Structures are given as C-alpha cells and as structure tokens.
Amino acid sequence: MVAPVALALVYPSLLAALMQANYTIFPDGDGVPHLIKLDSTPLTLEELDTLATDVNSITFTLYTRSNPSNGQVIALNDIASVSRSNWRANRPTIIVTHGWKSAGDKSSCTLIRDAFLKVQDCNVIVVDWSSIAKSIIYSQVAKSVPAVAERVASLVNFLRTKANLNSGNTKFIGHSLGAHVISLAARTVSKSAQVSEVIALDPAKPMFESNGPDGRVDRSHARNVQVIHTNAGLLGMNSAVGTSDFFANGGKSQPGCNSDMLGSCAHGRSYEYYSESITKPRGFPGTSQNGKPRAYMGGPSLDPSARGSYDVKTASHSPYALG
Image 1: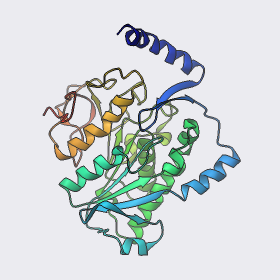
Image 2: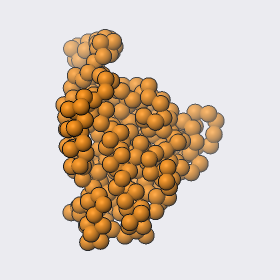
Image 3: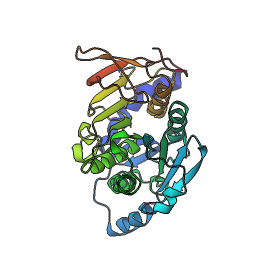
C-alpha cells in the first residue's frame, strides 16, 4: 500500500517536470501509457507525403438496423457504394470516431453505435483513421488532425450533395483526439450547411488546450456543441469550449477508477457515460455552475436548454446513471 501512495504523491511533480521539458505521459486506446514529446513544429515534407497517402486509407463504414454489426464501406465520391448500401437519407445520421492508437472497432465507437441503433432508426457512420492514429508518435498524429477532419468533411459534403444527407439532422461524435477531428470536420461542413450537433468526449489536451477555435473543439462549429469532461487538466481539456460543458464528478477523476494516476480510466469514462445516456436521456442531470436551471448531459438528442457549465454525478460502475 505504501508504494502506490508514495507514487501518487510523486507523480504530479514528475508530470510537471516532464511538461517543462516538452514531454508528458498519454495512454493509448487500451490504457497503455506512453511518454510523448509535445512537438509543435510543422510536419516535414516527407511526413506530409505519408499523411496524404494515409488520409486516402481512412474508411467510412455504415451501420443501420438492417446491418447493426456487419458494416458496409462507403467510398468517398463513389455514389455506387452508397446506392448498394442500406443508406437512407430520411434517417438521422451519426458520425462517430476514435482517438490516438485506437480504431473504429474499439468501444469508443461501438458502444455509441450500438446505443443509437437501439433507440433510433438511423445511419451510423464509423470513421476509422487508425492508419494515421496508430503511429507511436503522438505529436505527429495530433498535427494530422486537420487533414483527417478535412477528409471527414469531404465525405459528409459528398453525402449531402449526392445522397441527400441533411446536415441539420446529423451528429458528429468523437473521443479524445477524435473530438477535435469531429469538431473541425463539422466546422468545415457548416461553412456550407450548418451541422446540428457535435459531442466532444473528453477532447485531448496535449497540443490543443492553447489552440484557438480554428484548431480545436469549439462552440462555433455547430448549432449545439456539447463537451463531456472526465479527465480535465490531465489527458482532457480543462477549458469550457462548448455550447455546454458537463464536468462529470468534477471533471478530473472518476469514481471507480482506482489507482488511475495516468488518467486512462477517467478519460475513457466519457464515451461510457455518453453511450449510456443515449438509452437513458434523463439519466445524467447536470447542476448549472452559473445558477441556470438544470440540464441533461448527452442523450439521443442534446438538451437544447443546456448552456454554460454543469456538474453531473455518476455511479462508480455501470450502470452509471443516477437520474
């Protein structure tokens, strides 16, 4: 017992020292910690060439109630791939993606996919950019986010102009680095037709916290942008940047995440809470930090009355909803 307690006391000082040297510790999608360098220098020409190739390998996989687990790949600018799929333009569309060293078949995407298909007849498109996100060099992946976002926006605009997608009935959802991908994609799409909702699940802090609205999640990117904070200030952003920001259990650490010094458990709780809220839309009531009436976190459609910052309480294990 002594060793873990001692390490817990030492860890904040160690992390502060690392950050002064432009390093920090960031877990991957499986919770494995990695020492990462916070390098904001532009990508080299060689890295840009590789990125251009890798962007073309991003996949967009459609799931519907007719094919809830066997996805159908939709190819950008290939209307035949849409026509032979189960795509229906009259349904709501959900765009969901993952973060660093994760993939479209991981729980950050599948939990959300399955929850939406349970409560709604909708199109769920999972964006898998693991060809880029798999790199061990976090800074390189982080600097690739705008290019990934442009590719996602291109897919949405293709569906909007060629397959009658209604951007006003489309939600963009992403976890960690994927939260920035999805919000920046919505920003690009909204220049032509405003996106309905963006849900940013504990958006990654390293290399994004100090960015302006054009370089991270921001409330201006859609009609309604909700940020769910579960590891704010460590792996996730601490700033309130959404139309509404829900700080679960204070936003920094989560009950039931024992010995979570690196924050990986708390960071992942954001998509667990959100996926549960889809099937329990009044399960996560939030208390306003500015005296406004309470509002509900998440849900199949965001609470239109949610404005500003809220505190929300959860249980320490699934089911998490207390409402």
